[in-house]
Amino acid sequence: MTPQRKKRLAVVLALACGASLAAALALAALRQNINLFYTPSQIAAGEAPAHTRIRAGGLVQEGSLQRSPDSLVVQFSVTDGARRVAVQYRGILPDLFREGQGIVALGKLDSQGILQADEVLAKHDQNYMPPEAMHALEQAGASPPRTAGPGAAP
Image (tube, rainbow, N blue to C red; front, side, top):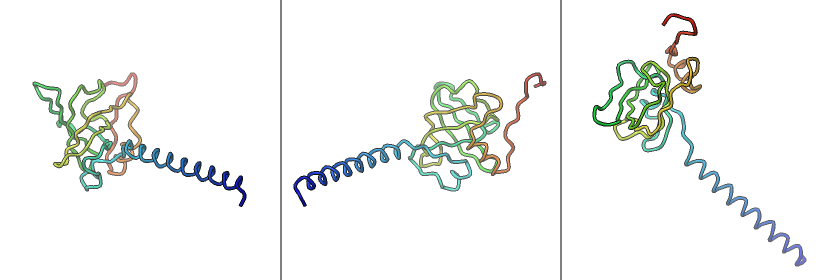
């Protein structure tokens, strides 16, 4: 092998190693930022990892909303029709948040199985529900929330 070919081989190997390292670092960064979606049934079955950021979605259970009188702490339950999971959130809820509506909560499960949410997303119009939450409700046999259309009586 000539010295020129050895030099080319070294450059190609260095580029391959650099590209592999860059790909490994990118995958590691993406893995840390992935938020997997879990239904309340999956969380209750223990499929969701504790102390890892996840997304949980479904309908806010009627009568489950509890607000702390002296802080911004809110507790409520999210259900998929079959099971429910308790959610605790500190902050101001979205304007469209209410009982019986579809939401997605992002946060970590604590050791008691309560989702400590750091973000709550509510549906943005009367016809929208996150696809994952809609699928979970259909799987559980629950009907999604029905809202009156324009011109309909409430």
